[in-house]
Image (cartoon, rainbow, N blue to C red; front, side, top):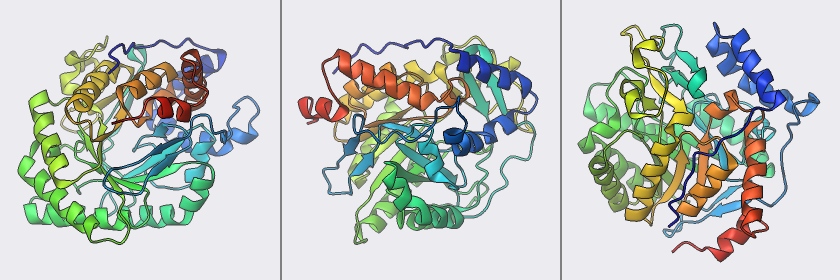
Length: 391
């Protein structure tokens, strides 16, 4: 196992400086900047200086297989857009224009949610190249999200995008049986059409306790959804999205349970609770962050400061649970980082915050990943996988 994971630096191009100017112009409207991503994705091919088109070359194709016979996942490249970027599942294929080889849409709950009504509910942390948010799982409901995925997934596959749906428990439920029924229903609806389903156990942005802190309920949830999966004619992969701030003993407890019930993999991790911001290599202090909820909470942080923590968690899981598929998420903003994580045994990566700080970030990271592979003598990611089989 390779342990030399450097927090590789990228340098500001002219286009990145333009992006910085846009952030300054809209600094009082951070949610507008957040929502504008879908328009960038849509119009990237027709705006000359954007240079955004699907990359249909095979150099970075990756197929993820599972020992239990679950359907393999086919990625145009192992760079995915994380849940939270496209909550509605509208115009999924547009994000191939930005260079992504997969997407996790949502997170969706059983019913429509307005989310956190406080404003602002998102903020940019320029000096740390980070974002903090407390959106509160606003979404159109899993029925609507699933219908949209169903109408687009064939086209998404044509542009080499793997499509997962992220689902979560509806905040506000108090009865344990009601919580269990709620998330199993959401899972079963998403399961019908998604390439895989991601269970979000760890959202710190709703003002309620995270699911991953209640092991009794988590065990019941994953037992129920794997039982449901086992009765279906098609077997699809299930991923659990874990929080990045858990101590190793709690991570091990959750991982032991996930392995036991037959979950395929984990997304490591989610946004980092800003109350623990001193645990990260950041310049900003918690009290300097803008309150994002009525209770003055600052939500969860994403972006560059999370990378070292992501690597530490990935190493732990790959060392102790080599049978589990791992999708790394947190602080991934450079193609060389992706290559380092691949060498650790990661199947794919998810990112989102980087698109606010790097122009056409996924395309840039593709080029860096190809360069890293070439330096080690590999013509493609498939070539790397053939010479470095997992097992």
